[in-house]
Image 1: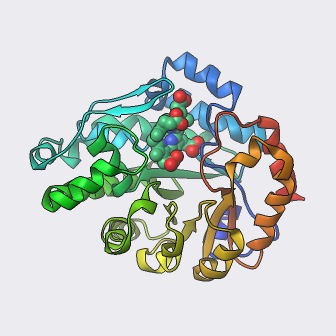
Image 2 (image 1 turned 120 degrees about the vertical axis):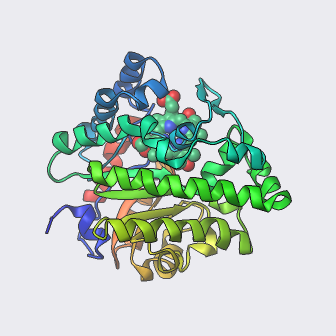
Image 3 (image 1 turned 45 degrees about the vertical axis):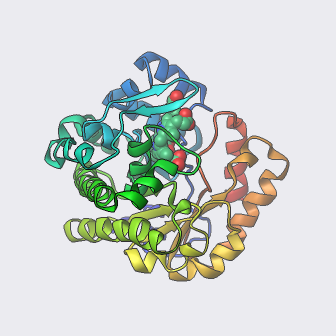
Length: 341
Ligand code: CP3
């Protein structure tokens, strides 16, 4: 068996020092990322250029020695592979063509076609399997169906996912058909990532927090359960991390209900609460607030607090959400020094 620290934590081992990585660790806060993105031309060209995508994945590993590398890509490549137009407007975020009714769902490309668009991502993973240090775990990922659907329905990021809620509430059949299509595509995409070398996969449900009550069960929990069950059937040894961001109380029992090996926790709940209520089910990942890497007055104290709170069980140190472009790269060294003592 392997000795990689992340894989040990995911198997439930309690390690003296938690392994650590950061969401968006390859990103705009790093000057070398900005240089490589400029070389690629733009963000999407970078995602689809395997050599340069592998390069930006490796940059934070070289600089900081994180325990995991997350492949460089984006959750919105799946809608693009299903036939939507996608662009990133500098300073404004993503723009997509939309799916707003049953005809829009029927017009999507079949799931069997997604690999045509996504094959460069698998090549990025194959490159990384040969380039990464032997102790570094390679993580693949996809967006969870609700979060991906929220962008496909609205055509952009929305503060409250209003358009997706509206479709769900007014044309349930069309919305469910969209969710089913994304669920199926996500299974095929993540499965291909594992075949290409991903050792762990993570499902990002960034907007799970806007689903309440039965909607949370139907559109956050159930798709995650279906995706994880099929991945486990095909790849029983590959751990899955689920991130139902801002799920609050619904973090409790999420791992048992979905079959996830680890639940990632955002920073809207305290690490002490998550240790008591969520970590009893197994490994957890999280949850330092990203703003401490911008304004570091409490950086070391808060980092040690997270490590201490989760020290009684399996834990992977991470932020509660992605590192922001205005973070100071030196603060990441300070965070790691506080984790590693
Ligand atoms: O280092 C890593 O974490 C791996 C790469 C990664 C990116 N996006 C690169 C990226 C991952 C795992 C994602 C996931 C992602 N993408 C999510 C889920 C996680 C989360 O943040 O909630 C979501 C919702 C997206 C969609 C997305 N991509 C948005 C809304 C934006 C625009 C906002 C922004 O930060 O500019 C992106 C762009 C994006 N994805 C960037 C990066 C590095 C910045 C683009 C740039 O370089 O200009």
